[in-house]
Length: 187
Image: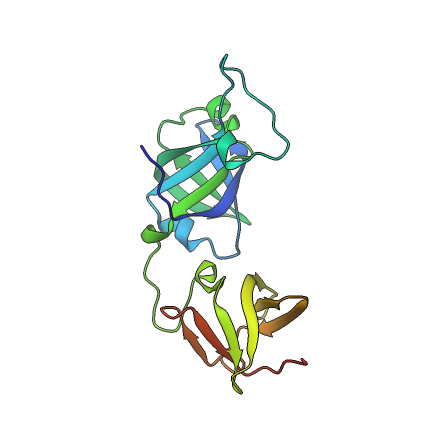
């Protein structure tokens, strides 16, 4: 099966959980709702070498990886991680082979959000302009800093950290890939 072009990394598999093939998943964000609701995950692993042996690569490239789809039989929150049962993974030894693998979900499978809510991955790459029409840069990252998210906006050597709250970000137009911010160049 060909992997979708819109895969978004949402976590990494840790140690096995229990004896029946469950895996611990360390979500990439503090809001793992997409992982919990998705019925199919894609898991990336290193391709085996020509003789079938497991390879060790310090910094794998896209060519070093293979992506496998897995039906999710169950997934639940457990402390700061998720515990999931991947179809076909029925014992601890098999689950252990997935340690360190990355978990992806197709962006097209993300649940629809209510009006005024956004997936962070959709904000990355949006152009940010202030109320005076000055281009502040492009969103390069969204991070959670406790009370609210922060947009990291970069333009050349200049970086702005803008709180992602309505007082500072009154308008987000995902269709146009533009964000309007009440923020000055010298902040």
